[in-house]
Image (cartoon, rainbow, N blue to C red; front, side, top):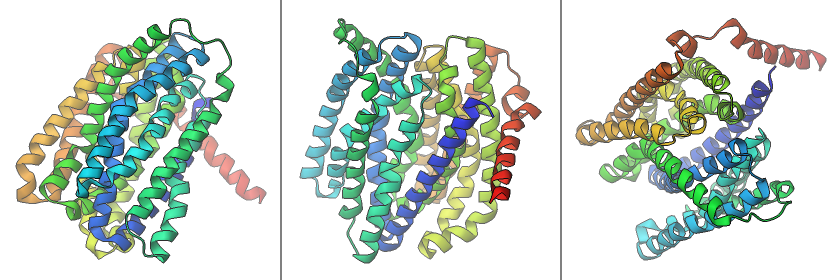
Length: 431
């Protein structure tokens, strides 16, 4: 099994565990706190995610300096910390003011606590990815998912807690994740401070701002439906709609697990290798997510009301309508990484995300009040598929790769799965 395949399996296992625990937490919140509580929980997570996407380009700038420009890690990290402080301070202040003076927005206080530590962990990803080291990234991600869920679920079930209990634990988990990340970076701290601090900071901000704009638009693309649903239909409707989002994000772990280990090659100096790895990630993503989507389509109408309760049954219909878009967009991270890290043009993914978000917003706004949350799901699927199609055509023109190389797996592609299955069977027999 190749090194990328091994790290992908490790990342996939970790992410599946994180998603399962996050799903378990969401189920507990839905059953104890009703659709309204689930909707408010989803809203807090969405706001944090939006803020993180507004700053995620910084880790791409750090990766660019470390992997492509080969600058000393110690210098990059010192500048990175200053940039993180500068980016997070005004956002945290704004969240605190809104949360303190608008009672319905009090959940934003917890987002404000989590945000600077979450940004720091996110920015540090660029250093770890430059070395192809996914383990610290995976472990840091377990704090707000696995560890937080293990703490707050018993509290809200047995103590019949309010929403502030899981929000407190969740935000504290991001603080703990940031502290862990700081310790994981220790081996990179050695070295003299950068002489050109202003130059490094300017480069991080310039490159990062372009990548941030792209990532922010991508997240808006992912969440424009959430904002429209809660604004036009309310928290209870969002609670039901969030079921489809959660299942879709769980399926996406199958493809996103490949991207982190592959970034070292996609962002490397060999453009032909980068294109080859990008296409390979797309083929594997399509295969895995398509198969997962078929399984979900067959079982979701039975499982959703069984797991979440009868009040959430319509979430199964929402999920089925979202599946085509989920399949299509599962391949976008590989394309975005190629355009941003290999071509050094983070604005290109921005255009595709802007196309998708605009299309989704228009269709949703025009149909949501007439057809309910199913309209948002249909608009999302349509917009995802349209944006991916345009991005795939552009990539094919740049690289000369045809549809077969982008979507059809080969015998060589199947070898890692065979190796994994053989290893698993051997382990079972050994017991």
